Length: 289
Image 1 (cartoon, rainbow, N blue to C red):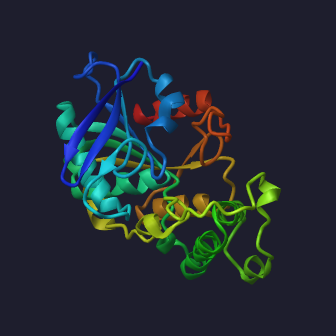
Image 2 (image 1 turned 60 degrees about the vertical axis):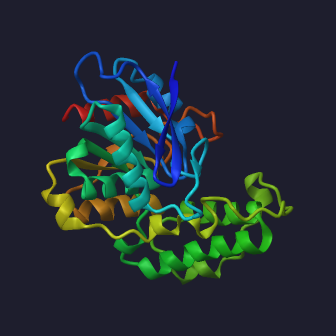
């Protein structure tokens, strides 16, 4: 059972869940699990499979239970990395191991860039960074399409566009852009517009994540062990390609994990992965295998 705490930081109050004792009873680093726009709830299944370690998962500012008071709505890796730096300090048990998923992987890379002393090992699972792709301009265009669909027609149309982007194999070619806009009903999503435009995934609020630029020199010279991971079922889709491109930029090959982009999920969010196998692989990687 997790203990929920709140950390006041500049411009926000950060909610986080602690599974296990602080400091850790066995002397091993805290395992920090981070996502974006996923909040701490997305890591419950994975945390349960690390009952022998102290695990911490948090809600990024403005997401989930974390309230922001800075008057901003953008979700930037730099701001989130500073929040995590403050959180690690508040835990009093650093440096930590970090598992970062999707946008959380980008935040983890920025955390190591800015505060390498905070992290022993970072496992960055499928960070979505457009600029590293050979078809970066086309990836930006494809991303702009689903955001425009969201602004014009609402959540269902935006999410259908996002899923179409995420399932496309290979580079974004003329064939991709010639396809008709996907029908939300095909994905079991609503076609009606509820009027909201604040979704952190479909709006411009998280554009800084996919626009992030790696400081390759800082990451390569950091004392942190950085491991870029890719799902075996992700194939040659967008996040698999960005993961491999991130690994290549850092002079390594992406380490293969079971399942897909959400491979650590147990189906609670309608996207079942292989959490048992995923946890075994993550444990192996954290242990240096």
